[in-house]
Image (cartoon, rainbow, N blue to C red; front, side):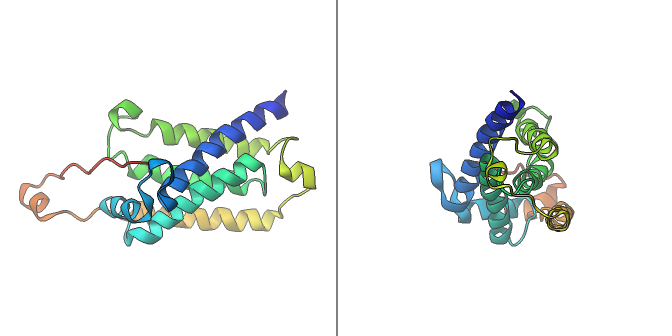
Length: 180
């Protein structure tokens, strides 16, 4: 039953995150596409926006697809953790945790699932198991380090205040994202 539970978690979370990344990268499923996602990320201080949108979309799309397939474990969950960590911290802009208030509830939930999948492994019903694949620890460590450094760099960035913010001293409300 554990392997079936892991499969259900992988397919649901991985599939939805892959779709979420496709919204950013390709405008699929009514998503904003790369240009609009880049503009929104620039409003959060992530400049230039296009590389950040590409990285976010790739982490979500690639991480979700690898997770759903149970392929090259734990690279998929690491990609999800990276993208959702940034989303949980940058996107809410100090709002309460609940998604109904524009908060980080959904990214935090995705992070918990990705971490659990990274720790548990993909299970028997995965491509890794089917092909007997196991990534070297050094490769996993390298990907984790690059993800962590990218996350730190993104978290250090700050939105640039607009002229009206500078005059009033209060930040203007940021436009809500089509997708986080």
